[in-house]
Length: 394
Image 1 (cartoon, rainbow, N blue to C red):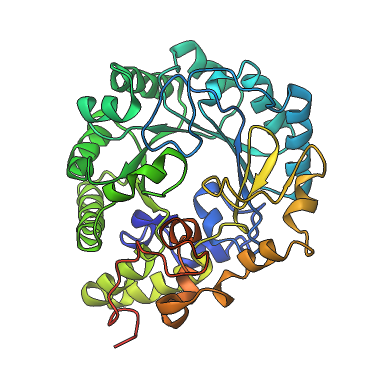
Image 2: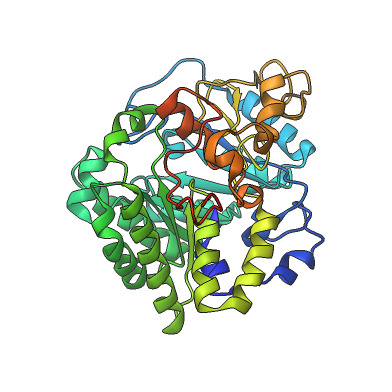
C-alpha cells in the first residue's frame, strides 16, 4: 500500500513510525506498513461463497456452497496460531465473509486473541443490525468494494441493485460508529469515474479509500486487455493525488491509498522533488521504511480450505496448509526454497527491475502480474509506468 495522503499531504512523518520502535505489535493500524519486523497482515478468505459475481474476482466466487472450507473449530485454531505468531491484523475476506454463518463468533475470537480484525466486503449484506453487531465486537474497519457509480458498479458486480445496497451498508456502518472505507479497482472500464468516487466520499462522509491497480488473477486474468496503458496509469495516479490534495486543502483530510503497484511510491517522490523538495526527503525515508511489495513477508493469505499463499492473488502457489501445520511454521519454513526467494525477491528480479535505482523502495513490484503476462516469475512487472530515465537507465 502506498499512502497518498500520508506521503504527499504529510499526514504521517518519519518520526511517527520511529516513536513506536517500528514493531508491528506496537504500531497503530495506519503505520503498520512502516514496521521493520514485517509480521504479516493475514488475509483469510474465510469462505469462497459470494452473493455477487464480480468480473475481476481473484477467487472466482459464485453464489453456491463450496466443500472443504475450514470449520468453525479449525478457524478458531487458525486465529489462535496467527495471534501466537504475532500477526497484527486478520482481514476476513472471501468470497463474501458475511455469508459465513459463524463470522461473528470468529471476529469475537480474533479480538479476544489480541488480533485487530477487519472485513473486506461487497457491503450488500450489511444491515443496521449487522453493523451494530460488528461494532459490539470491536471490529477495526470495514472495507466496502465499489467500482464506480451505480450503472458501472452493477455491471462489474453482476447484480442490479448492488450499488444501492452497498451504499446502504456503508451508511449502516457509519450509523453504528464503525470506520468504513471504499475499495476501487482501476481499469479501462471505470478509470473515468475516479472523480465520481471522490464525490461519493465527500457526500457520504467516508474517511478512507483504497485504489487498487488491477492484478491478473482469478477472473481478473481475463481482464489483461482492460488494464490501463502506462501513460493513462500515470494520469490516473496524478488525478488521485490532485483530488487528495484538494480535499486536504479544504479541511477534509481523508485517507487515500493506492495498492498493488509499488512504483507509485517513487512516482510520488519524483513529483514532490519538483514541488516540495523538503517533503520529498521525508517521503523517501518513509518509502524506505515501507520497503515496497511485501508479498510473502508483510502480507499473507489463508484460503477457505486452509492453503497458505504469499498473498491473496497468488492462488496457484501454495506454501502449506494450516490443517497440517500452524501458520507460523509454514511462513518461516527455510526449507521452502521458493518462499525464501519471494521473501528476498529483490535479489532475484531481472531486467529493468534488477537495474532500477528504486529497487529498495519498490522491491520489484508485483510478481504475480509479471508471471501472468510473461510466464516468468522474476520478469519486470509490466504495470511499472516509470520511464527508463526515471529509474536511472538513461
